[in-house]
Image 1 (cartoon, rainbow over the protein chains, first blue to last red):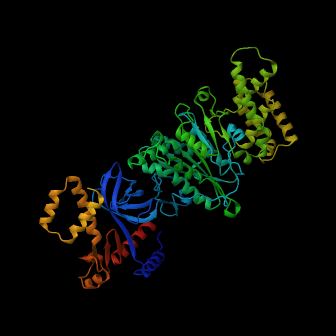
Image 2: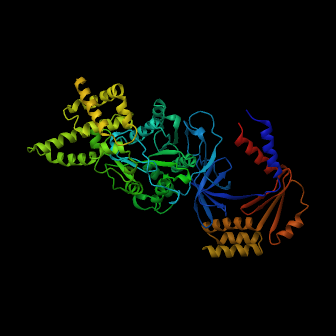
Image 3: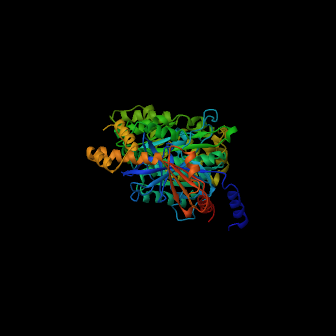
Length: 502
Length: 114
């Protein structure tokens, strides 16, 4: 409902200022329209990245400033832009209107709704490009962002404000990890707002993600920014920056935000396409020289602010798709060097039924361990080492030579550890259940359980614990290091359940 | 023909030009140079001209001529501007018109109210 007096008041304010301000516009004339790039003369005051509007309502950023003309990359259809058309500078850069209204919505990088719901009009204008927070405003990562995936939370913990890369070939479960992490945020006491940025993906895939988030009840705290494969390269180029701009709005309010960039390989492709049509010099793999800066300035916007600045955080989960497990290609190495660790997913492991297919040797989290809760830290301390030993021993054991009892024991333990870290998709676990499962294996309580019934045993044990031992789970959910008494109770719980398990 | 020569030609063209000279220049230049010459001539023309649009007839032309002594004043009467004046100086537009203010108000309403 429109409030008449408010409208009149606002209009009166505008009329009061009439005549006081002179509007200065900077115009240009289109001299060329080729490959979706508009070259215009004039626009002598244009800035790089400035929004230029066309008479048909189309708009685009200035990407090249040459001696006598500028190159503009319109976001919409360019077929109706003709030589001689007048273009006008706006004096502003691209921004997105952000408010709490965006939660639960699917939008494009300019904030227009794509979900047939009400038009999004109100909100604070957040610039797509922004310099990241400085060193003085930040503090070290110190609070965990739980993914609900045992393998990650125990061995490669992610902290709020961290940038953890998810890397792997196609169809290895990269998006699955990101989606599980978003779903897991509903268990949080301190809420995390999730932003899923889909870059260059099929619209059907994006629809599946949105549908899954809806069915899991995760859309209420999530926003999906979509620039699909059928959208222009300019849209795909802007999409991750739009995600970061939305995240910064919530960051200013002191909230914790998780942003998933799915994926930055396609983002680099879009930028390569733009750079080539702009006739910028091509470098390695035809990417332009500033492709590193493209990703570093985006990921640098992930931050953990100190209390004086609100204490909010932006955690980034960028995704990179490799070709034939080659993590030493140009874009993967760039993003690996920018991020604070990587989760490397391998096709061989995936095909062997190890899901999530995390390669323990080549995955790492550089800052997350500082944010790991003492509960998980105490139960999973030896996990990574034991798994690494198992992997090297397993290679030798393939020769078929006879093994001594100690080696055989290590191999058995390794197999069990690998088995316990398997986890079905869309079923993230709470921290107490993760701790229970991992402790049950690392302490040897499950050494006599046959490996083929391991997963069933684990699931039933969780149900049993929830019914019969809620106090143990409560003790494990506080985040503190489990006491001797709690550990004894866990042993009792597992022993009791073993008797019932068939 | 390089950029300097084109600039020189433009300067000469502006001193004393007639139909004959234009035809002579046209016949001497090749297609690419002629294109460059025309482009630069257009740009020089817009740099030299100051376009003033107003809804009423040109009663302030002399005052504008005094303000911009080295520019050719082109006056356009445009009743749609309602009130005020609009000055187009090459690629800059200074808009003092009521029409522009109304457009700003309409834009404001469209962006803020359903």
